[in-house]
Length: 263
Picture 1 (tube, one colour):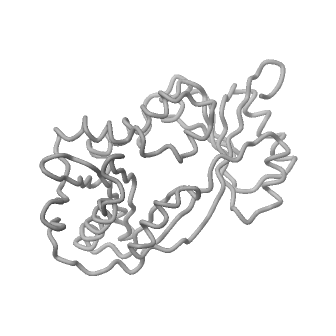
Picture 2 (cartoon, helix red, strand yellow):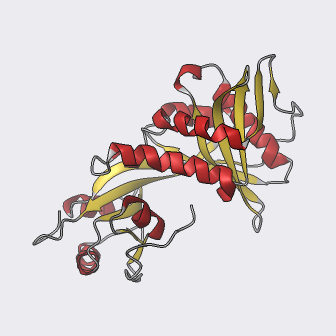
């Protein structure tokens, strides 16, 4: 999501870390991210000094799952593992199936309409509780819910290149967001959500299939999607669509109090 003006704009990027303007503005606390995917004791000391100087409250760090040395350093220096970030790829993209969004007699997959947004916001409330933000108890639950409400709203307002919704009997029950990277002819699936009462009915699979049609019609060569390692249902959904795991990483968060030391 694109960054808005941040009340902490004076935080300076370094070779080690960068401030995250959108996250900072949304959560109303200074948030930053470590550039590198490896850590040493020496680098963490430098990072802590930078975070203390700019009074950063939360620091994100993404490491390769297989990097056990970095994981040991991170855990010894008070980074908390929050999520396994699983990236899945589909290449080549299947040819068009030509179903035009019709799945059986009842289910229709169609482009989003402005009037759908309030329903989509409600659907997000219980779709993303496997994510690292919900896993981190330092983030307020209401804020986590608002995060995904904001994400789907922005997706419908141009952040995504397409938002498709699943509808049965004029009731919207799910959505999927699609993103293009024109310079590489690649695409990405962003958010996928199905309302709690409509799960295990094939709606998620139909949304993924229609997204693949949308990408194929635009000559996309490769599609990526990121999900949580603990989200077995999502992993199965994408594997059923032909995606395969290409990378696994760990998200760590480190919180600071800046009251005589780190927290």
